[in-house]
Image 1: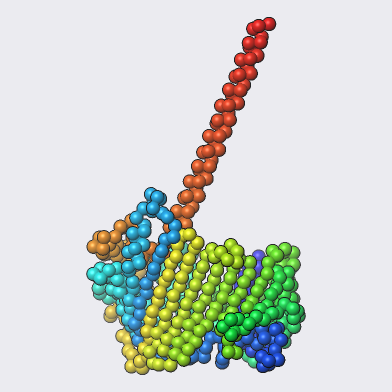
Image 2: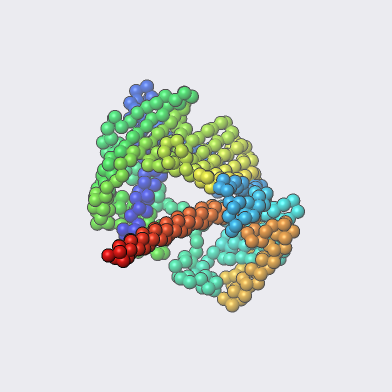
Length: 511
């Protein structure tokens, strides 16, 4: 049943509605001196979604709003650093890939440009720097509904697509099932239905949050004073308790037509023109989920939620469940804010198996020139360690102007026939391939791996393929060893049979 397949989406929407409304902020107004461990947890959990003094600082919200409403210049750089932890030197298929990775680490992308989000306009001058002498510059521009890219080495006019009638354009490209593609992609669409009225906030508070919170035993909460002066409040729940909480939420939701209607309004906005009765949730659908969950045996695991406060402000949240650890920390000064998000998969509490870490740093928030720095680290035990870095300095400027994309300076593909587009794409592919071969030859790069930028995204699959091939070799070797053992056993058995027959024949001859 298709409704069944989207039940997780519905639950996620429900949780987002709770968080978006800052529901927890309604509940706790005590001083720490009078707080129990349970109340302390609730108070500092509420700060995570407080719209005024919450975990997401007001200065960040103001900065994001300013970028939406004020034109600005950009000046940034993107690069990657890849370290292969696995020894692939003996694998004949990937010999030389480590050299390709070295070229990838020496490659970076720089950009400068102008952005006016309020008018849906953007212009960026981008350069792929393979070395000090081998570079690929191009321009990317957005003007309202038209998106274009241009490079002097490929085409003088922009090659552009208009964000309208995309089903027809997809058919011209020869894409199958083009009717599943929306006619227009809402790139700046905001889910207005996620906003909660004051009445809805109070309704969720009274019907869901408070009953769940009040039903959790005081003994499930604890408090720890940390060495740096901070205090951590912890909620510990077993899998069976989590299961019961989940079922209680669904039981309440099943009878709550107000929230069912709210969820359906969000679903309708998400699926827009495709929305129909298939996606509409009903009480019967929720009961099906309750019945399904009730029959399931959940593994005996423990959920721990740690909320840490320092100087009466929440600065860290940590969630541990099964073999997964997730935490977010915040460090704020007068001018800078840094968020660190960490996701670990572990074999046990000490051995880290896979790590995904994201650092977001905003510097100069009280000035007219702000630097954004994003660092993503992906590490897989004994396989690879990859770090992507993005830096951008944003300088606000009310006097920015961007030249429009028109038929005078751009080839807008929507205006061409299917035959013209397919012929053009073929010629474009040939031209790009020629330029890449020429640049890679000048760089001394092995064309087997196409381009250094490929290593930025392909390394995990390459290394895991090596591991797969090694596993297959081990399996084949084990099979061969077992076959050899069976063969040897057959030889020994045949020799034994022959020996018995020989003895029998000898005895018969003597008689």
